[in-house]
Image 1: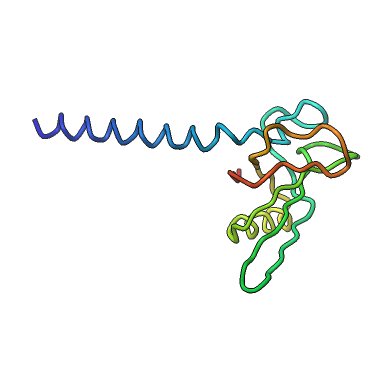
Image 2: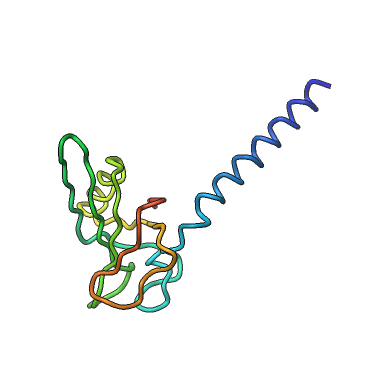
Length: 127
């Protein structure tokens, strides 16, 4: 009897957690690595620059990326974040030549311009 209740509670918590995660990603649709033009289809990007600023104790910054395995890219996509851990992870990826998958809250990845704003960083994944 207790195991049935425990299974039900764990199942409900899993469903609630999945719905929260889905709601967070639903508005985040800019993933430059998944663009067909100039990128691969799995969403991985290379960090080409990280600009970090600290004003009155508040840290924020911009992460500039290009799709993985793209050569002579004519544009880069950049994301804003005030998450210190994300900025540190992006700097480490840049230094170690590792790929990341970044998702921003822009309604779609812009398709024109040399610098394309991907929105506020929502998710950052590493290999």
